Length: 279
Image (spheres, rainbow, N blue to C red):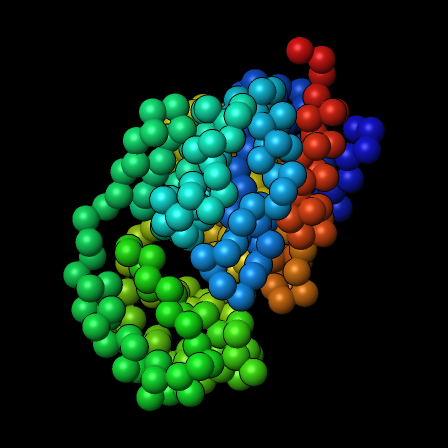
C-alpha cells in the first residue's frame, strides 16, 4: 500500500484493501470540524485546512462518492469550507445537522427540515440558563438554526465550565424533547432521530457503495463508527479513521487507524489518491 499508514485492525485492513480494489464504488465520508478543519475557539472561523480541498478533489476523481457528514448546518460547512468553489468536487454531497440537511454540489440544491418546536422553545430559554449557570464570558452560544450549541473552549476552565453546564442543559433538552450531544468542549441541543451513523448508512444504501471510509474526531462520530461496524457485518468492508485528539480518547480506541488531526487526514487522502490504480 505504499506510503499509506497501516490500520491496526484486520477489519480496517480489509476495508482499506476493498477501497483500493474497487475505488469506483467506494464511499469516502468525513466530518468537518476537527477532521477537515482545525478546531478553533470561534466556530465561525473554522476554515478547512489549506490542503484539504485539493486533496479531497484529487481523490474524488477516482472514488465513487465523496461526502461530508457534519453536525454543523450544511450551509455553514459549505460556506466555511468553500465547498461550493472547490474545483473537482462537483459531485460532493454534504449532510448537515447529523444528516437532517443535505446539499448537493451537482445541483447546488439545499434541503433543510422545518423548524423543530423544541429548538425554538429552547432558544428562548438558553441565554438565561447559561448566564445563570456560568459567568457570561465563559460560554458562547452558537445558533445552528436546526440546533443550538454551547461552547466552553474560550473559558478560563473549559472542562469545569463544560461540567457545570452539562446537567442544566440536559434538563433543558429533556423539557423540550431534544437530545443533548456532548463534544469537544461543546454541548449541543438538537432534535432526536438524526445521527451520523444513520446518515452514513442511508448514503451507503443510496449509492450502492461496496466499501466505506469514515473519518471523524468527536463523540458524535462514534455513531458513524458503529455504523461502519454494522456495515462490515453485513458484508460492506469499511475503515474507521480517527482525526487524532487527546480530548476524545473513546474515538481513538474505536478507530482502525488514527492520524494526526486535519493535517494527518490530508496526508491520508493524498496517500490514497497516489495508491489507487492508474486511471
